[in-house]
Length: 195
Length: 123
Image (cartoon, rainbow over all chains, first blue to last red):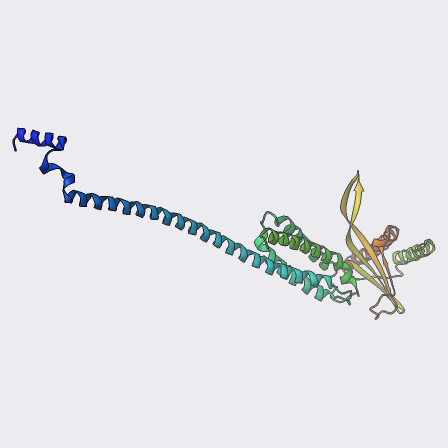
């Protein structure tokens, strides 16, 4: 094609008069155009659904995190309630101190409750809310041990009636008060969790 | 406790203190804080307890450790139920009296221990 012929073709296209180059008059053009439009529409829908799917996935992820958190909190509450039951049991034992209690019985009781209380409170020893009361409880346990040592019968002497009760009544009452304090704080924690 | 009875009790405790100091009543250490005195007719027990007391100093209430004493009398050496119990925690004046008795007993026990130690030394 010479330069002149090409110029004529361009002019005719511009003028819309070139029969051989009026592309909109060709079926191929319209098929392509329709396919392109349909493709565009489908892509648009595809993009829209992708956005929707992404949003749903985000929502599902958030809900899963919330559910996991709720399950964790529920587990924590169950654990705290178990601890509260054990603490109540200890408190009841301390309240039933008999006047006739012997040294060896008081020693066994103190050892038992000391072991249990240390085990139950150990996970919360550094807890911001509970640490102070737990420290007071441990102090009360130490003082009870000291008080008990002060009535340890001399090996050759008969145990004096009521002496162990007199020595241990106040220290056991102090421990019981500390247990009640810790119990109260645990109750508050479960209330805050919405139980 | 009525005043008359209290006065009688004080006089009785004074006599016990005197007898203890004089060596007529020999107390035995039953445990680190409890002493007993036996007679054919009965038994007496004095126990020291570390209690706590609220003290107001300069308008500030403080909790201080304050010992108190319990004197129990048993009708028979073998009887486990006390016939009489006097608790110093209930009356400060009585507590002071019982403290003087406890100190007298401690002095006697310490003296007996020292005498024993001296007896171990070569002449």
